[in-house]
Image (cartoon, helix red, strand yellow):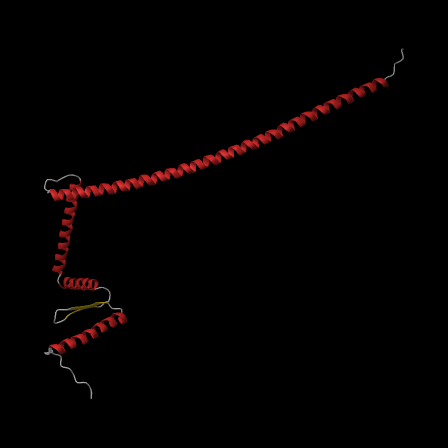
Length: 223
């Protein structure tokens, strides 16, 4: 025989009611989890028992599910009633004006203006804010100075290295010039010696030729 149809109504027996709640709660939680996994659905489930105990399940986080639900409900209400959307933007505008006024007041107070309406605690809080701001400014200033000093040191190191390299190049050029001058001096002496020897040989050769020509001359008869 098949299972008889259960009448859906409140279970009067307290023990049976709690047993049924426990079984069906576990089954409901299991189905919700399976639905979120199988269908990639965002599921949020909240249960309160008759004894005021809370049971919940969320596929991501209950907070995100509730926020999404509230936003969709609000959008739906605004779509149904344009006056709600107008009121919503009016509240947003009023909130933004209030925030702007608060920022302007804080800025003037940080500049030392409009302090007469502040009590001792508010003045001490403002002083603490200024001290924290000054500390942050000094820290940032010190970091910038440190970075600039390191950059200057790097540039000075590079300049010193370049200067040292230039001195080495100048010394190398000087050595090459000295060697070249030595070679030029040797060549000049060789050239001078060669010219002197050539002049001596040429002069001796000319004298020999002249003596020979003198020996070959004959006296001319008188007429």
